[in-house]
Length: 66
Image (cartoon, rainbow, N blue to C red; front, side, top):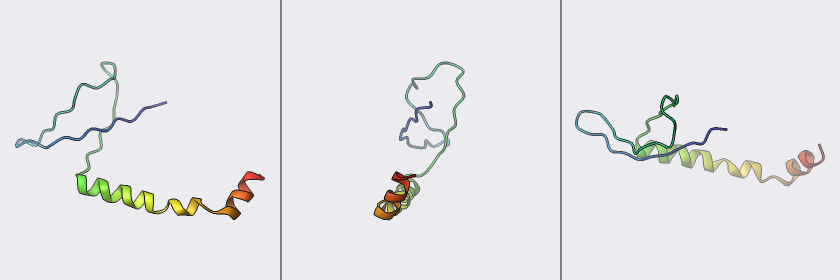
């Protein structure tokens, strides 16, 4: 199972960023997704705004009896 890591960084003049030493073995393949802080916050709010959908007693009763 993969463990996600989240780091914040500031883009330097030459367009590069620095990350701390990662707790991964040398040669490990990783995927890096770059999101400006504003967009990341908006995405998090959108994801959390739909959680009320899961708080549904009728749905809970149906799935609990399945």
